[in-house]
Image 1 (cartoon, rainbow, N blue to C red):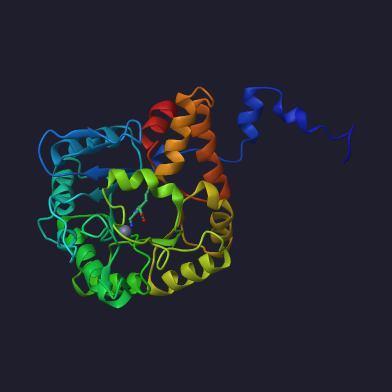
Image 2 (cartoon, helix red, strand yellow; image 1 turned 60 degrees about the vertical axis):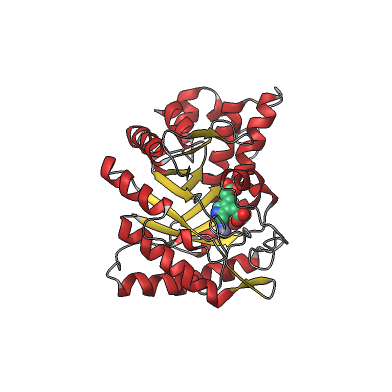
Amino acid sequence: MPFPVDRLRRLRANEPLRRLVRETHLEPSQNILPLFVVPGEGVRKPISSMPGVCQTSIDETVRDCEEALSLEIGGVMLFGIPAHKDEQASGGYDEHGIVQEAIRAIKRATPDLMVVTDVCNCEYTSHGHCGKIVNGDVDNDATLDWLAASALSHAKAGADMVAPSDMMDGRVGRIRSTLDAAGYSNLPIMSYAAKFSSAYYGPFREAAESAPQFGDRRSYQMDPANGREALREMELDVAEGADILMVKPAGAYLDVIRAAAERFPHPIAAYQVSGEFSQIHAAARLGWLDLERTMLESLIAIRRAGARIVMTYFAKDVARLLG
Ligand code: PBG
Ligand code: ZN
């Protein structure tokens, strides 16, 4: 009905009405908090480009996990920074590597907390690339062995879910078959299915000490211009056994999240990455944006687009705010 019969302002008149007709909600239990684990004890080192985010040793990480559990957030996602990096990324699939030991400690202290692990090599290679370098580029098939070994070592340590973020072709299938053969057929894989080569990862590379020492990641991560190709990536990961499909980054790729949610019945996840987090903080520090409101709006947009699970550095803040 046209105006004046229909008046859309009618349903906006007061908060009880607005709450009643609200289409999307933030649920702290569907947010996952990324954590950066470093060697040592009692370490809590702030990351200058990510206000409030720290690199923490295992003992301090366990404290963060206890808090995460009490705030009832959806889980944590672990990234490890090893004491030594090498050409073979050996710290990534070491049974007693930093992430593997962190998983054990966390599951001992907070067995009910969902522990997801990022599976990639870039934190562990001396050159900072996500795989094995052959003739100046990342070799796809050789890298699959490292990824499968990493995922299996995380499973053995007690991880609840693995999340490969490397963008090698065929890695979901290889990880699935490796896990199955070792008796972990019930361990879910959340695939970073559509991961774009993004400037928004800048602050993360400080946090994870994983900036590539030469070149960039464009020969394996996706071109930001390609939405249709993202659907092919997701189709392949589904065929290889991915349980959850992730789009990353989130805010600048809401169209991809929406397309994924319409096309696949699988749960869709999105990663609100470091740069999305940092730019909100930076603008808030300058007094140009309101931190709380911008945080909530950025996250509601990701949910509205169709993401069920959101990786976000705001996970604790949201949980505290919405209680
Ligand atoms: C590594 C990885 C990256 C992120 C998650 N896993 C960085 C990259 O690909 O360079 C980015 C997360 C963020 O920016 O918050 N494969
Ligand atoms: Zn990587």
